[in-house]
Length: 160
Image (cartoon, rainbow, N blue to C red):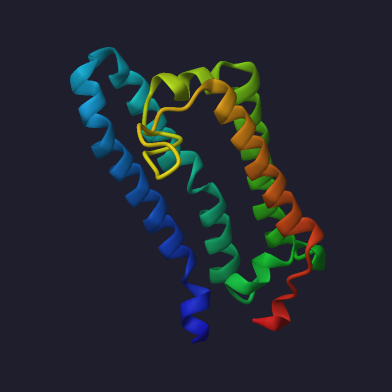
């Protein structure tokens, strides 16, 4: 079981890559309708592949070098493991950059113009379209949930 936890970060990379390719495939119908969207989707796709894997690479470095004891240790940053803190710092930097992009660099408007990136059709939203205001509101909620889960709630690694 320990070997699974030591190399589970590879699964995170695989899921991130798979999600990027699913998005790329999903975007083709929108690009066919409006070819001017192609560059935006392509840039977003490359961003997911690059930025989306930074935390998992840090996690992999920690697991492979023995500086961490596997995935459960990453759920408890308050134990102050330097690699866990580096992972959390990378996530915080990514969240700050995405916050800046969404709120101050027209990122929410970009996501509104490029359907299917941020939200897909659901029971609550049949057409999958959201406004820039919806994106900003939901992004803030997601960010708040992450902060509460990782820094306020107590998930000691010894419980896993």
